[in-house]
Amino acid sequence: MATRPLTKEERRQQAIMYPVDWLEERSGLVGGIKYFLFRHVPADTNWMQTLGSAALTAFIVQATTGVFLAMYYQPTPDQAYPSIVNITDHVTLGWLVRGMHRWGASVFIILMFLHMGRVFLFGAYKYPRELNWIVGVSILLLGMLEGFTGYLLPWDQTAYWATVVGINLNGTAPFLGPWLAQFLRGGSEIGAETLTRFYSLHMLVIPGGIIALIGLHLYLVVRLGVTSPPWSKEAAGMERPEVDGKVRAGLTRPVMRGGGGRD
Ligand code: HEM
View 1 (cartoon, helix red, strand yellow):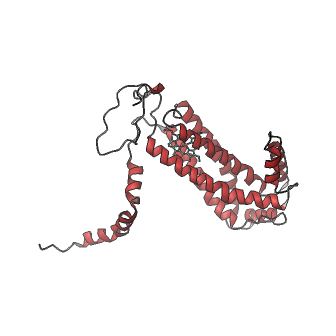
View 2: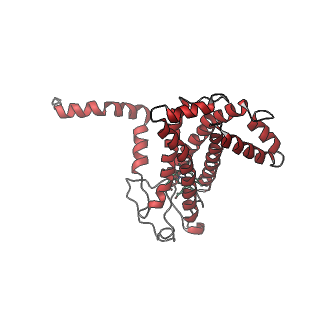
View 3: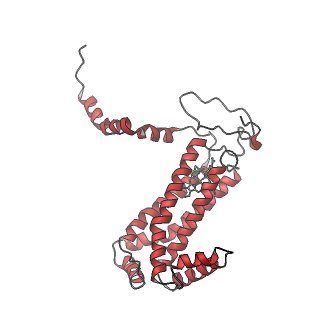
């Protein structure tokens, strides 16, 4: 059968789509991203349900600014403070990147608490989302640990004495306390080992853990679907309007409060 030659426009479109089709054929990633972006959410989803994405944005800002700071920061007792002064006073836009990272840390923690408050008020921690609540609490703990380890890095008086207080507090915990304090100090005193240890935790271990947990958290959000606000008719146990066959509503459908409608 004779095929007509492609028009210029069709060839242009084919060229643009080639890398996307190549990737989709080998990974299915494009379909996955489309599903993520165009999945069905309850019609009465509201602004409070954007707090999770706001926390995600704050985390991305922290990770990005942190990478740039790590290019100039030196984690030794002699060089830590001078390298911070250098970033603030001499590196191009260093003051801005450092300021974003320092203030952004508080923004990230505040947004996590606001998001957690929203989840609590909407009752979104209940069946079947208990596991996602537990994942969220783990992210929150790691987020606070990230703040604690980052606070020492400027190695000035405030940083040093705040860490002395923090480590001593940990040391008073029953059974594990003394071991934990020793581990955090990297010895019997706060010094060079503590600084490198905190740096490694701050820029490798904890962010790695947070990224993995955010991945799991978002997977569960997509798998379980988003909760309707408490004032919605559906949350009160009324019939859910049928979703048209082409859009998936998340694998598990919300059930009546109190579990009355659970299959
Ligand atoms: C880095 C921190 C976090 C990020 C980036 C994040 C991200 C998100 C996003 C994007 C959503 C869906 C939209 C929304 O409800 O806002 C969500 C939902 C959820 N999050 Fe988080 N979250 C974080 C921390 C937490 C914490 C600390 C908790 C609780 C302790 C938590 C528990 C939940 C639960 C249970 C849902 C499901 C809510 C629903 O179905 O309505 N998350 N999260």
